[in-house]
Length: 220
Ligand code: AMP
Image (cartoon, rainbow, N blue to C red):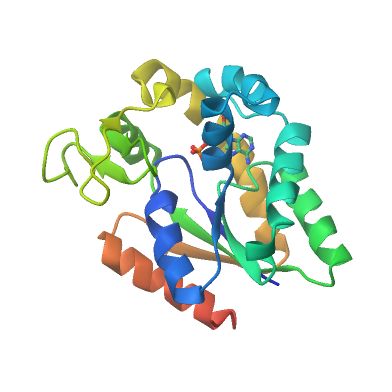
């Protein structure tokens, strides 16, 4: 099982890079934020539990999040591995992932940090619009859609996530950046961390992410 962890703060560009890497490696993207948004949309009990944390810009508690991730990794399309986007987000989640992979005689192959300074993250999140159908991301200044309010890829409506409102962005940053540091330290200690400069243009970031993954020996 090839497991690649994509790390970065909200707005660092993980959601843009993950599908590019998935195409390259032939394994699915597993994004816990997308799984939670789908559960909220479908009004599942898990979605109801998660929604109040998400709307407040807080992390969903570890026990809920870890259960959700493990269920998803158990599905057949993830048998060969996955690119994890938005998980782990805490040290406890990182340890739980190591433990479950060890049971399968596997381990995280590499953790790639897409590094972007905090001021730039706030700028990016406050201009972010995503599509209803698939979460394709746009930015009102740096990457606007061809037709205002419509996704270039699937034509669905664009909307601003409730947790991308300015007040919520600051709450997310305050809680999530501290937790991200724990996760970065976890992979640095395991000698699995590679850092990519996330301020570069999207195609340069994706080449750098691909090079980091290649260097770790993760092939198709
Ligand atoms: P994202 O789309 O990755 O920014 O995630 C949206 C929201 O879902 C986050 O602000 C959290 O409330 C929740 N979430 C996603 N992934 C996790 C995680 N690994 N741990 C805790 N909460 C998460």
